Image (cartoon, rainbow, N blue to C red; front, side, top):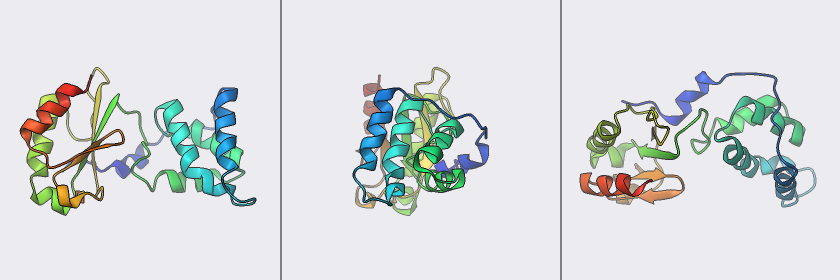
Length: 175
Ligand code: FES
């Protein structure tokens, strides 16, 4: 069985480095703060983590250090939130992040076969990234689409009621 996304928290490389961002990105981050009441800026953590992930490709320690300073939080507060949600990548990932749901409904509706098919086509194990950096496959817990199992997510898009043919079409469509 492949690793789930949160397993990567034990591979985090810690450092004291603080990430730097362009003035435009910092302005974007500040605009997120204005959406929350005074004194509740911590609530902006999730949208800000999305900005860090978009800018740096994943949630790395320098990005976390930046957010802690930006929000006047402990670094552990930022890690606490970042590592709780599988939508935040704790390691570098490929251009297309294929997240396969491995929970009960998907599992009994054919997830193991789908996972084997995808991984053998891409030549990687669950949790791996192709050598060309194009695809990463991650096994995740329920994505809330159990009625259309088996399913997976690529980026922000769901792909549901999967079979081998649909998987082949999907992989062919990702350039
Ligand atoms: S079990 Fe797969 S989406 Fe819920």
